[in-house]
Amino acid sequence: MKRAWFVTVVAMLAGVCLAQSPRQVEVVTEASRTNQTGTVTGPLFTPNETGMFRVNFYVQCTKGDPVNGQGLGPMLYWKDDNGREQLFLGSVSDKLAGLPTSYVFIIKASEGQPITWAVNTYPPDDSEYEVYLALERIGPKVQ
Image 1 (tube, one colour):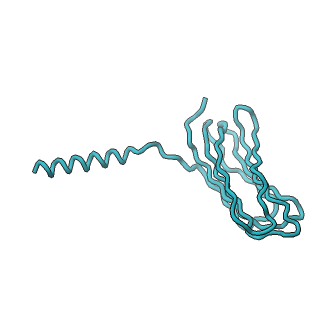
Image 2: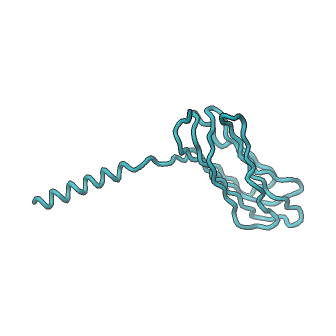
Image 3: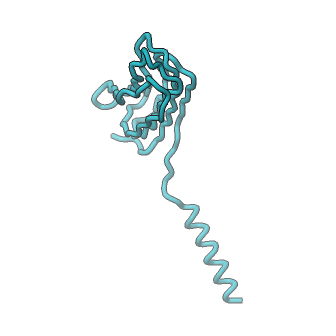
């Protein structure tokens, strides 16, 4: 009887410990576009309080342009304590369909200021590509 009681108590305590896991990262928004040509831009998120965010940015050329392919230029725009920020993530080859390129980075974004993104191309480039973004809140309000 005592052993059954002990096993029950241990099982209940283990359940309580597992239920109190560390703070989880919150995915606040995602954006996805497929079969894109030309420059594409869009809003990602407008935070209601200043905070730290992890940005996951994925770009893949799905149909290359071997003659006019000039590269895809993923960009991210946001505002922090220094004012308006923009980050060029480097050129992604688009002469041929190929492996995806992904970026993960952390930003501090100001309350009420939109976080936006773009993938720039240059005419007459008509490569097709896809893009996927996920924004995760990783930190509390930052003073």
